[in-house]
Every structure is written in structure tokens, then in C-alpha cells.
Figure 1 (spheres, rainbow, N blue to C red):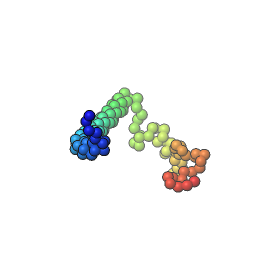
Figure 2 (spheres, rainbow, N blue to C red):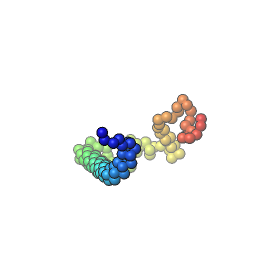
Figure 3 (cartoon, rainbow, N blue to C red):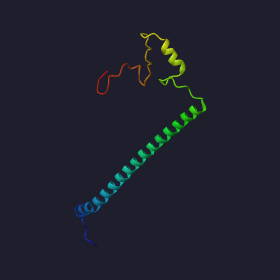
Length: 121
């Protein structure tokens, strides 16, 4: 019958060996995964730029086609439609339009005004 070795003695011998062997392996895995993540991020950024460029080209082509066909609105100097320029000219100088107010998420909630993070109600 072989001698019985207590498990903690096996651990004392195996732990340093495992540390020497596994640390470089884990380091390599982490280094590779970070490199892959950076490459994916770079590729996604380039794809986004390409889509943005393509959308800008398509918009420019559509505007050029509208201008060439005569279907587009005529230029008024300020980019506003013809009626808007006439309306602006007819308005009195002191008569300013009120700014449009947009509803935002959470505005006017039943709980009252937001007090911000870390502040009590």
C-alpha cells in the first residue's frame, strides 16, 4: 500500500508549479483578447465612417437630382422656403417668435422635480 500524502502537502508542491505554468498562459489569453477587442472597435469605427460618407453622398445626389429636375424649392438666400421668407419680411421687428419647447423624458413626473443623484427628496 502506497504511503498516504496529506492533500495540503500536494497543494504546497503543485501551487507554485501551476502558478509558473498558468500565469504566462492566462497573460497571453488576456493580451490576445484585448488585441481582438481593439481591432473590432477599429473596424466598427471605420464601418461607421463609411456609412456616414455613403449617406452624405446619397443626400448630395438626391439634392442634385432635385435641382436638376426643377422639383426642388428655389433658393431664397437663407435656405428657407419662399413663403417663409415673405412671412419673415412682413413680420414687425419687435415681434419675435417664441422658441419651441420640446418634451423630454421624465419631465413633469408625478414624483416632482428631480433632485439629482445623491440628494434626498
